[in-house]
Length: 110
Length: 116
Image (cartoon, rainbow over all chains, first blue to last red; front, side, top):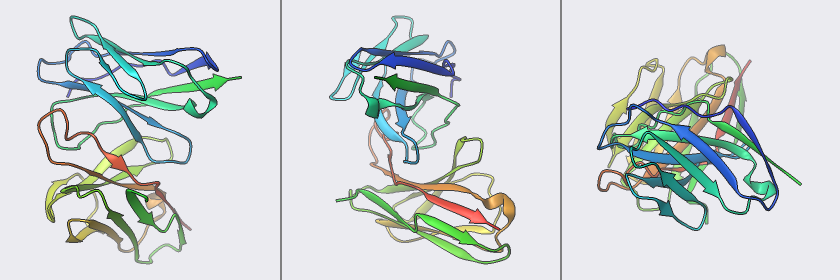
């Protein structure tokens, strides 16, 4: 599975959009981009995933560049409860064998 | 209703003891997992079971043995506990589906194991 690179930490003001970048320049054509987050002392939580097209659900939007070498997770209106570590993971369909990196620690501030 | 529940939430024990962590999911998923999060916060898969059969068995000491009595349960037994086993253990489940969907895992809230 392709490796991902994310910033170590980011800050965001409450109510503003949080844009979390992820680089995956070695991604293959059949690999998906998944985003999870882990709020302190909780288990990881699935957010969204995509292959080529941009995706949106009730939690977030995922923007994947045309060359698929990078993506951005967007939380449209960040709240204090969105403070967490966000993980970008590229998988080829290995049935749950997710390789978590260090992720981005997002701090949402009042 | 809790989708993936694991017990206990905290487990403090002495070196050399044998302990178990239980996990149950009520999502009807066919696949269950155990992940370990170490002190540096790295999450790594330990085991994966699909419909009671072992699918993934990463390099884990054989003191760790998963047991799946049915597809809704995957328990983790640990024998002869060592100091280095101290970590947070997460149970998870996922549906079997098309590529690109079966990596949507649902995690439990974790069991913090402390070996003294």
